[in-house]
Image (cartoon, rainbow, N blue to C red):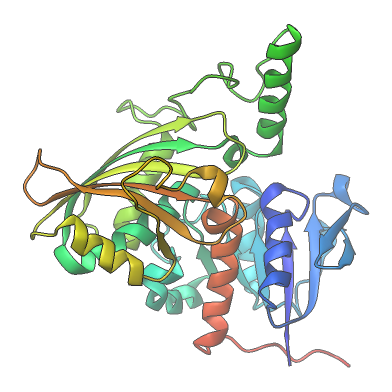
Length: 344
């Protein structure tokens, strides 16, 4: 018997991607339901070659749902995830609402799949921030080899991480530059077309933004609380795909060649690293792909046991929708959940 899956936030960028990936990976679902707010009721979304009509979250009965993929924002998740979990469904939440809750596992399957078994306390599993997900996929195999002490990361994050309105703003501003029209900022505090903005999420008292704090806190929870990490998160005029320049300091020696060999064999990683023009991955190549691409691997002579690398991934897929579906697959493959019996 297959599983019944509900996708909450099915009309958003990530929700639509979740539906696509469920179909692509032939997820063992007997039924998939698309849910969103009342204003989206009746909107049609694609699930493979099928079309689903969106239903209202607030009126939906989750009693026979096995897995709920939640991508409707933190406020909705705070209200609804505990209610859905109480019906026996496992909620895999894409927002930041539950990530640092000690009773909620924060999972990247290639990194800490064993921790998924802890979902039973609240029937909720958290998906990490998009920029964190790709980073820890790259860090984990290197950490296993040489023990990471410190990470310095600068991100180059696409506008899709801020939603469909942000993508529309980049498009309209870019068009306005060429047609000499007025550039209007709604989603971003400064123009994003032909510009970069060193500010994602709200500022905190210590001067870091919340996006930067998420990378620090989530990496510790997923990978190792002893790792020190500092981040600068920057929005760039790219539609899909986050890039990261990463400097890593290790406890033990590791060469660039060793790192390349390790990462080539690591789950979820794809090394493209030729020291020549074009011998590296960019967000353009990563868009629509599942892998975390790693390039520009080199030794960092400014610290003992240092490496530098470039890391790129599709933020809507590995950074959000794909990771959530992989978590659901992990629950099934490890026999942590069974499908509910449903009336014939």
